Amino acid sequence: MDWLIEALLKMAKLDAGTVSMKKKTVNVSDLLKKSVQDFLIPMELREQNLVIDCTDMVSLRGDEYWLREAVGNIVKNCMEHTPAGGEICIRAAENHLYTEITVSDNGAGIDKEDLPHIFERFYRVDKARSRETGGNGLGLAITRNAILLHRGSIKVHSIEQQGTTFAVRIPLMYSE
Image 1 (cartoon, helix red, strand yellow):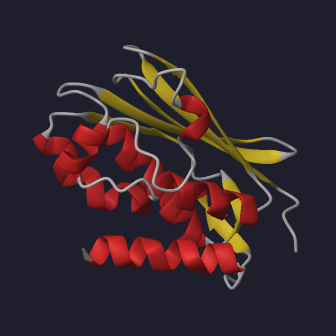
Image 2: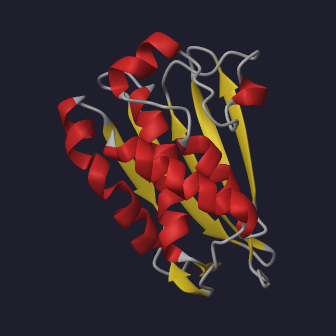
């Protein structure tokens, strides 16, 4: 219940435009390690393998709190839809225009009919499974809004029974 209230408050702040993004240089390798911290034990219990591929040279400019929230929500989603023995891979790279973070899994994938709706608040792909895992349909909506406040983009590519990849791009010239 506490998590639901906290998620609703985050969503309300994002919707109301009352969130002030703290722009600072963020080391992406550190960001990724902090983002997955809460999921390491559940992944171990599920026998899921986590791979993080990011050098210490990759950075971006943004609000570390909201970026951690966004990446963490994506990782949580992937973890919940990846079977035992599956793999979740996070990669980050920087070019002259943006920093890209991709989170991929080899899980169940997302049905084509559900794909356009996964960033809508309260939308759950598998309602019965979501009740088991505690999903409430707010995590990816919060993620999308946090990324948009960084003037970034988020896209998802999924193939049923093969896996899903989320790609987040944050422009290097992010400014107010």
